[in-house]
Image (cartoon, rainbow, N blue to C red):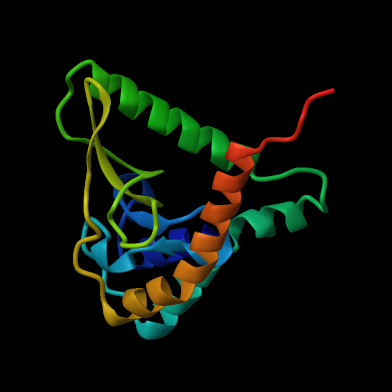
Length: 168
């Protein structure tokens, strides 16, 4: 994330004011930041886009390695959970235009029963699962590359949910 911070600062943007949708899944190649849809709009070179995407995909591993195996990216997970909880509660209170990216059951991607994409939150929770918007060529290729892994992870999760380990 330091690389993202440095690039945004070099482009004159405040990290607190930047929104980058992240779609797909939760691990490695299945994490796909849609840098072409960054708000406010930011132009990245091909090299920057590739480096940023890779860095974002490997951020969790990077934290574990930095902690020498003595922990994980708990602060990142806590921040994401707090942000999602706050947005969900505001949406449930009727606050309009509450959007977050969430891994939910959807038909956004044919053949993938679950997918992380931007959702609108409302009084009942997830009010609408939005499509992916316009992807650039880099994002289309990354999406195609990640789908087999994401589908395998989903199948594994569904199998586990149907047959969890027996408690002693």
